Amino acid sequence: MKKKIYLITQDYPFGNSETSFIDNEYRALLDTYDVFTLATELGENTDFNEEKNHGIIDLKVSFCKKILYALRFLVEKDAWIEIISICSERKNVLKNLARAVMYGTYAEIFFYRLRRKINLSKDTKALFYFFWWDRKCLGLTMHRKKYPQIKIIARNHGYDLFDARELYGRQYFKPQMDRELERLIFAAQYSKDYYLKRYKLNDSPKYPVRLLGVADQKPDLSVGKEKIFHILSCSSAIALKRIDLIIDGLSLIKDTEIKWVHIGDGSELENLKISAEKKLGRNIDYDFVGEYSNREVIKYYRENNVNCFITTTSTEGGNPVSIQEALSFGIPVIAVNVGDIHYMIDKNGILLSEDPSGNEIADAVLKIACMDNEHYADLRKNSYDIYCRLYNAEVNCQRFIKDLEQI
Image (tube, rainbow, N blue to C red; front, side, top):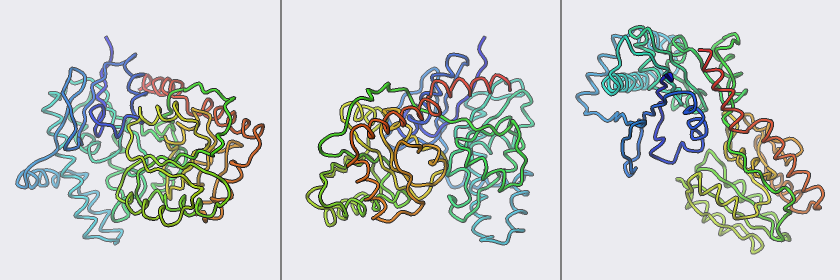
């Protein structure tokens, strides 16, 4: 009989936001475990139907019930550990206290709804896998001692790890959650190094780095560049991703024909369109195609000869899936030196500085666009080699499952 795993997600498998992150790992887990997914943050328009192996936990409650859950949370030891820590640091004390209580309140809501949803009891034998190391994980770790036969693991990414990604510059309840975990899985070495230093911890097998990876596209590496150099970027259109820097760089290129396509939607999209209209010359054919599902992104790569992938993100907690996908197609990459991106660039493109200028971006694009076919073919081969060595989802998933079997 297979062991049971509860995989706690945001909207997977009902929405599209997590598919590129989770899908390969989920399918690999099915071969070894009885996997039941629990989605907790579905969008208003998400079309879903609960099935045998998929469920939903709705965290929406009335204001009065939030007060009740807040009171429940405030009698927990972990709550007071956090309160004392916030007060002792003396930074944004009132704001951080309010946010910590809100965090803990939703943790309690999740726990009580989880308990009811799966009939959680002291006899429950299961592994709980939190794909994001957030308030839902706290909900179960706070009550862990009541359920001696369960095991808990969590994976962290960026928003759920780095202090700078939180509203008031502090991540909440990390030591308390860590105490009750069998494994805390890092998606990048950069993230692990940050965590161990931040909380003054020694390395141990409890903290493995396990890259996610993407599917092998088995590209035809003999395909050369298009006459019009085809660049692709793929990210949310938000300030954090600094897509405006791509526009600044392309605006300095005057004599080379370029086709630039950006996949992704967000709050800055309209401003980016206006900026591109003002700054880009006639030699730059650009298109903001909006949001694509992961399958649509892969389809685009298959149906178009993309010559280069580019990202100018300001921060990155790990190894961006968008770059991994480009590598799986043997596509050269231009990217900034943040997070673990430097591991993804090795004679297969150009690593920009952390805060590149428009001139630096323009020079990188022109270097690849004007490259002879022989050297361009080397870039393609090197991109695919890096993919095979580091980001093959099938290989990485099997390593991850071997870890689980030791828990």
